Image (cartoon, rainbow, N blue to C red; front, side, top):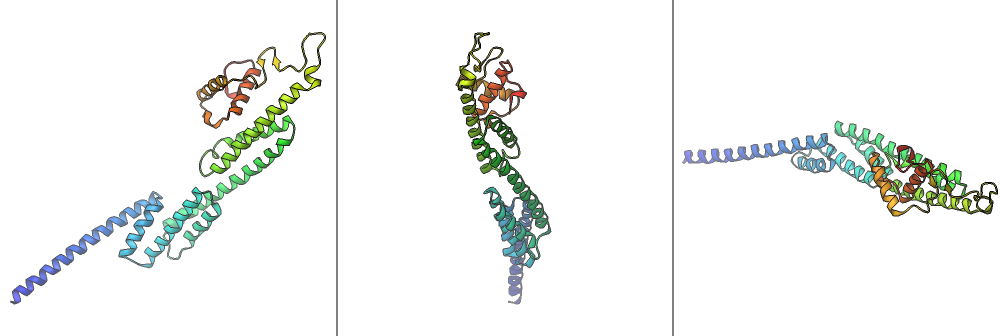
Length: 270
């Protein structure tokens, strides 16, 4: 009878120890995945893994890490939504968490600098947009200058996230400026003082929209086929034609024709 009892106790201990080893192995695997997720800055995955670890070990260190990751996920979501003030608050919370993970603190500190850079870039771009918008009521020279300024904003970093809202504003205003510039040029070429006066010596009309050397300098005779061909030439120059509106392409074609060429070169691009 005693022997039977001893055997039963031994069997129970073996099952218990085996279960513990399996649990330990599972926890070790989760911790390993968590380390990898933190290194790869996959904060959403790391947050879930940290909660799993905390379920097995609710130490202050594990609780703090889970809290930090919750704030980090919120910060990244805010950045994607271009809510930079919210992102800053969440990242500061990561850094300020008591008993926080050192790696997360370092990553949050670095991310704060990136968010500040986003905000600085947007502030500079907004000043350019404000000045360019003011040019809509000014002369052709001012419109041209404003469009040249906007051309710098149609390149990196503004073509990528998280500047999508700003980039849409840039393209919209650039189109308005192009239309205003074309309208101003048309009015100037059709005014009585520049287009109606006849040159008695040459027999031609002063202020004509046709350049004898290079052909038309007006964008009015540029066809859809001309724009398609121009986009192909722009792509061949290594530029992405997607970032050029139709009005941009018309201006490029106009510049090319004034120079007396039939092929676009880099100097023609804004």
